[in-house]
Image (cartoon, rainbow, N blue to C red; front, side):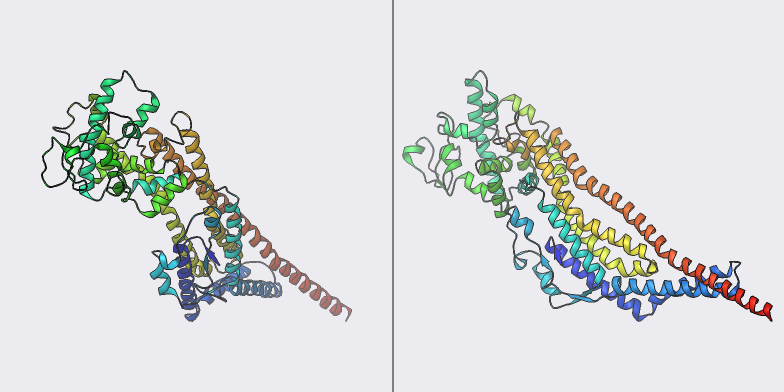
Length: 503
């Protein structure tokens, strides 16, 4: 038996342990006989209402009772009685898809589920033969179907990891605001007043504080310096003449302040990301991963979420760069609305993160509910068929998520190719809080929720219909026996009458 996540591994195994406990309660208290008693009593009561002779009723009752008992005991033996031993060493986490797509998955003891796995180690659960077969076949079909879906770039997962990274260090957050006021605002003001216009590429390149254009073009970041001392750069008379030596450091150029190795603002900002987000961004965007991550981290939306609501454009600019373009101020006047959207948009991405957890919990609930459902269903074959379809449908849901993820990647690629520059401008979508972000998140919700719902609806109809058809076929057996018994009684009575007449 396999699982597609550590949570599913633990919860499904826990579900079978609870399944065994419930079945033990049902058998120990004798409750398992109640459905049989009620069904046999129902047979006798139904036959008493018919107008057939007593001998025919006896044969019919015997045939129907045998049918009910035999069929119920077969269902109990294969679908209710735990037989197949399994434990956590027998159940294993399937890594086929992660290996196929080059995704590194930590070992159980390195994951957050290590304590749970350790707690359940050594316990043994028993699985009924039928459900063991259904689980194995369903997982095999699901894994084969998922393997047929091409590996995607999983852009939404990257954005989820990136947008949930904030500037937790208030000193770095303050330094970002100071860099924007002392370097970016001055450089942007000079650019706006020295050029008649900007091309679309230039406008995109200079719309954030770590712009390569400002760093590489003479007269901008190499010209302006920090207005306050920085302890990471010692005071230098050749560089800092004109600034007072306060003993708290020197006044580096904006280019050095941003890009110096080790103590530059860029390297310290990148250290805010965990290794998972860094590796994901490097694998998806090997050429632009650094700019992609930094653009979000120093964006007005993230600095608002990280701090107290002030950003480097709306606050901390008094006395520094007072000539910042009025248009930028007006564009950022709606920052509160955008920040509110920025907190709501990741909720759609969080939905995707939560679905596998819900899936694992539902699997556990379905496994635990098998004994009482079989009991209240009176061990009917249609109940087994309905539960079989439900289990297969639930196990098969990851295929629809894989297909939806691939389609989501392709839709993003189509949407952001061309006019927004997909390869170099992915950061526009990464920090998007506009209407296109809402539309794409609605599409995401439709794919991750509507597709499984449609699948469940179709499979539910098939399971219920097939269950009723199977029950109808099985109920035809005792009816045939009843007719044969009645005919046999009639033949015997005719023979007796003929013998009496001859005498």
